[in-house]
Image (cartoon, rainbow, N blue to C red; front, side, top):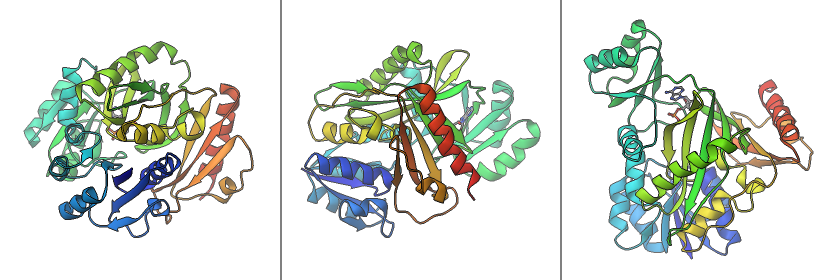
Length: 364
Ligand code: AMP
């Protein structure tokens, strides 16, 4: 099949590799010059909101998907009359607005941190009174990797928060003193078959994912519940493809933070660490096949390379580690690659991850 992918970043690149292994061909749309996925298929250089370019990509392909969330849903709906678009545009629309996302969690009985809608400066004061300190104020739309967020610790911070974010639609939520952050990634086929990978534990620095451990240590007791939440989302959305749900563990329970209707950074370990990767299962699902086994036979870990790919990491020579270099130009805060480790024990995995992290943090 010919698969059209909106977005040609590293997620598109890894989807493209998986598609090629399955005998499919990919075409991409992305505004960047020479984006990572250009190594796996032709890229039309166009803005993500170029409705004509999206329509042209759809006309050239058998199925359309996306690796980037800020795609105009109307443009996808329009082409969906003529071509299969997966994940469904309705799921993307819900994920694009933190308020509709939270309302979906509430509808499905998935617990989440207390929150308030903030449409005015007065709403912000009311939210702070209702939620107590600290609160985190987030833009409803176009936030990613901790961008568009402000943590307010007292009433003194609210003026600065309003100055920074007040021109946008907002929500405020309670700051969660979480014990740790987990994610669950699932896939659903067109026939409704579902798989979920084991829970992954994620560490963020400045709102950006730094490292992941899979399976998340001591998470066997939470897996059934997380899988239930995943199933509710997949079924409610009549979902096709890969979906990621980010969770906080607080007071021993799970609280939903957000979901992503796409392959997810916390699932990169699945390339080497699982029988079937998130990328492979996404392609299988959107192309009408059944997803394959989503397991984690040996402890796996992943470290993101952000801002630079240190020489010490390039020089790592260990069969238990695999370096993925996305071929991007280095820039502060930019995800340039990742290292996956697969080990024989959790202890060994943790040591390997610590070694890579040390190399990453000690390098300029
Ligand atoms: P988000 O863009 O909502 O995924 O937020 C990025 C990161 O900020 C999360 O992965 C958390 O580490 C942190 N964060 C977001 N919301 C909260 C919250 N309500 N309480 C504590 N930490 C949060």
